[in-house]
Image 1 (cartoon, rainbow, N blue to C red):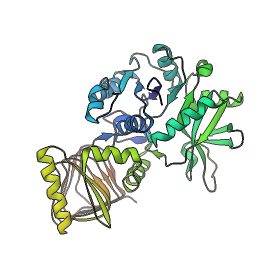
Image 2 (image 1 turned 90 degrees about the horizontal axis):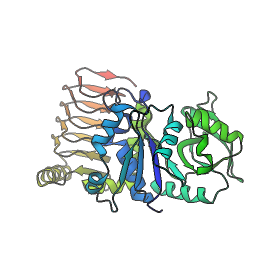
Image 3 (image 1 turned 135 degrees about the vertical axis):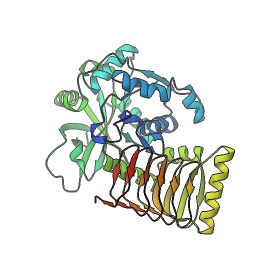
Length: 387
């Protein structure tokens, strides 16, 4: 794909469905694992797999603007960190323009940056195979439809816009936004990934799902393309946890490539461990953890991520989980199918299953947690069973 294609990413939502993780940061900066923001992995997927380099963040208000601008800046430092060539280029919506929805934000930026060719719109709370975005763009350029939607099949469609799609004509004939009806066997849903041609720019007002798509579908102007690879949604804590663990088990090519740039990998017949560490100190600690895994004093099963400068005591059992940077895990603790972000101190003899912890906190000794969803800077000192 040519590098003059622009991608617009609406980022101004409050992230109410993802609370408590959005209480302190904008939704796109909630980490996927460790302290890697969801948006960082989205951008890396688009840059690495789709060869995209020009991005506009549809921020709304100074909080969202300063959060994102402080992290990503103009793109050169971020590109250097991940060895991207040519470098990515980031622009920002004027934070004083308080848009009336995602489509209004897109139109504002199209006008502000004088975009006159087809644009890509992706959302800031889902991850995809970047190559499929490149394929979608090329298909859309040849399509008779001026607005083309990426579709995916899900067995739980009720949180999304469900599409009636004619596979022969590639035409979307109807959208039902977040339907109440049950769909046996699942349904095709809107991923929020769009290719929009200039001839329909004037239709962009308010929100894509509630306003733009119903108008364009009624005029017969919306086409669709079904993605064949997994689409990962991070819209609420439960979906976030399920997607993060699934990505560890079966990483997309771009996610695996991202991890190889920041981690040391250790594999056995029953496990794969990603231990973060590139500096001399962090690398030495990573190698020490790997040696103890090899010796059997730390038990690993499945796919596990361990952040840099972490301390894992003897007898710890980790299965299909992520531990962020600066973790401390006390002896004989078990962590199973859980996503623990960075800077947690977890006591000894604990058992944590199917849980998602925000950034920073402590867990006392002898605590059992099942199905726990905790925000940032939490202290947990009693047995919790939520599932």
